[in-house]
Image 1 (cartoon, rainbow, N blue to C red):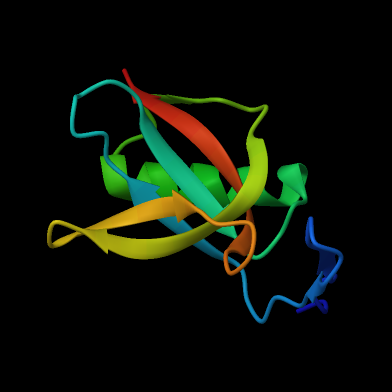
Image 2 (cartoon, one colour; image 1 turned 180 degrees about the vertical axis):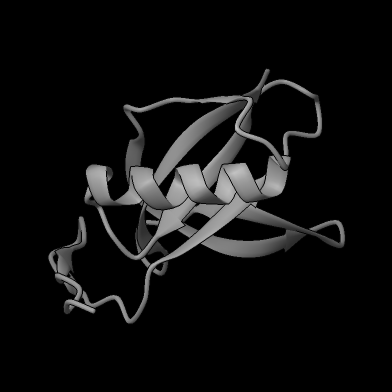
Length: 103
């Protein structure tokens, strides 16, 4: 496995990822779900992992994944006892968010 590239935070500090991971987040309002790939801002590398995660979670290849992606800083948190992903430019991990729609 190749070493992961460090990413500069908005405040100038360097973020050094230890691993890349994908998180599938279902939308509670049944619109589009999201796949977050944390540990990189490389959209092309993240798209491959996001596609594999969506395929695994949906259980088929019948989905539409937004190939553009939104680069940002996210971390997991709890909201009313439920795990959520929140934007956090100070403590969050570098990541790319892709919208996913089941067909």
